[in-house]
Image 1 (cartoon, rainbow, N blue to C red):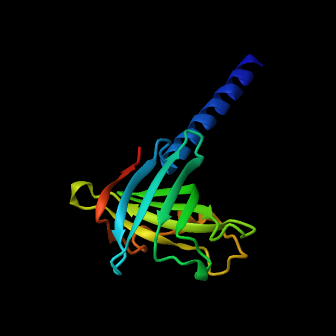
Image 2 (image 1 turned 90 degrees about the horizontal axis):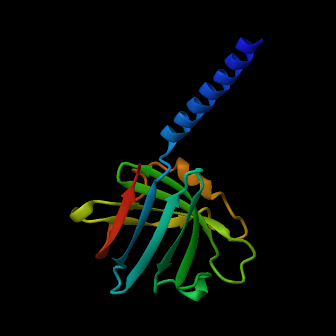
Length: 170
């Protein structure tokens, strides 16, 4: 009976360690990305962005991002500044893809999903993908976790004029 109990305990431990190993291979528990910078809008105006995102040891992603774009006008349902609560992070090599929620305007009932990506090229010039909403309907919210499905080569990344982006996968 003792052998059976000890064998059962060892089996549970082995399965638990195996699950933790597989989970740690799926993503690093210290994955993070942060940065700030300026983008040229092509109309002589510039957009500013900041973000700070990390994956906690339990796998939960937390962080925020802000994009200030003076070309956004209130007539199109957006304010000049977008604040994003980031809850999804996918890192492929030196590219980080994010998903989060934001409101286009303060009177909007629910936040909707938005996605963006950054590329850390060290001194060679960092790049950013400004992002996109889940859809063009502000009454639907979408799923920020879909960032996991976006391939790293899909976003069209633009060089930043100044700033620094850091992507860390561990």
